[in-house]
Length: 135
Image 1 (cartoon, rainbow, N blue to C red):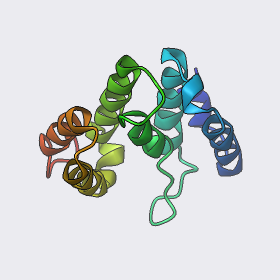
Image 2: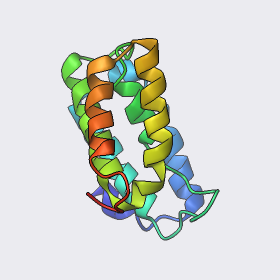
Image 3: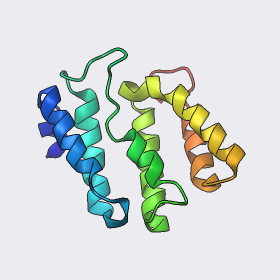
Image 4: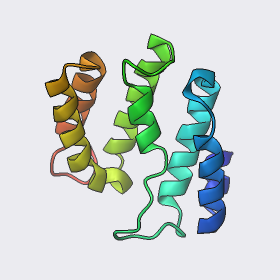
């Protein structure tokens, strides 16, 4: 599927496909679109063509964060599903470097008092594997 294909695309094509996915308005997202985003994120993040250090691309994580927010123009069910996908990705060893930054975003979100339920669930998932590469 898309995860398999995106794992083999050269970086310029990964970026182009990601730009296309990013152009889909959140209001038009369905469960199928979320599945597409997840599959692309898995393939793109794990791609051998994705640079390893500072230039690493974290395909889909920002969109999942935005989709789980109370302000996202999607159903509560889709918000919850986006939070679950984000938690699953952060539990994956390839996304371990993003746990600490996401932890900071969770704290800021809780301080602001928005998206509390989803943020607490995500925070719990992140804290369940604080120092291990996978949980």
